[in-house]
Length: 350
Ligand code: AMP
Ligand code: MG
Image 1: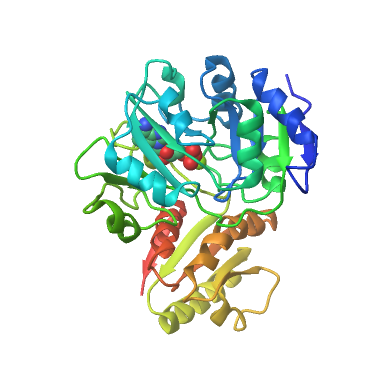
Image 2: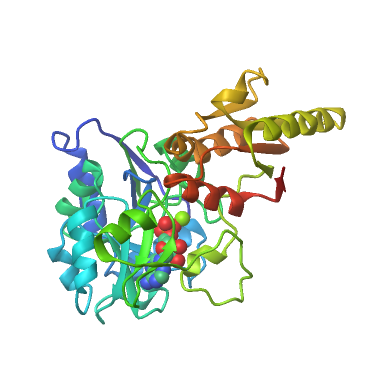
């Protein structure tokens, strides 16, 4: 049966009682979507099996894809993990609150459903004040995957959450646009050296500065459902709009040239084509079907605009979305490439 999803529009989480109402929904086993600095999350009490089940149900998320548990202090991790390894503490000290998720050995008190049956649990302390207030007022650790239908681009605004999950969840805290636009970096510290399972804003180099060598344990491919991978979430079709996505990667001039050819081709074939394109090239494609990815040497702008742009162009009824892959792949750029390669139906290298 469809739920009546409440929407709380909140400007200041410290001054508005509606956040308390949202926290009460969590305390009573409900599901509440809320902003974090990365993307919007769909939260429920991580220790309440039933509540967590409703997250999986609303998103249509595969049961073996574990959830990230959000806390408001390092101390609250102690309820969830057997021990906090030295390297994890160093990372928490440096990067929390912030977009780094740390995988540690879980305590029995964390239900199987939350961890997808794994004996580890992924934990993060977000920086966003709405998220922190909601965790603090509910007094619960919040299991919260991205608040989108499974497989769709992650939501960077409350409107995106409404379009995917309205009628399926109890409430949405609308705290405006998120600041980063891409999910957290995930690092597993149960192995030596620690392993990065998903790239995000915090890079391998940022992490190595504090804990020494770490290895990369992800790739940019979509894996088959029956495969076993260390971070189960990374094997599923991801971040995909309804349109067919074509990524053109390479040096700027060549990419712009190839995109022009593709646009001409698709126009002749009457395919409605949208462009997710760098600021430098957008002037060559004057159209309401072009959405800027930002400046090519500012990958943080591409991070903020990728999911937003995919959803915007999808909403325009495009058949094809062409993504300009000539932006900088350093730092968060590497995470943007990871997401867009997974979203792409075809990758053209020029
Ligand atoms: P999402 O919440 O939608 O951002 O997805 C969470 C990501 O964290 C997925 O890629 C999961 O596979 C990964 N993750 C969560 N918990 C664990 C864990 N215990 N071990 C490995 N990866 C995890
Ligand atoms: Mg997700």
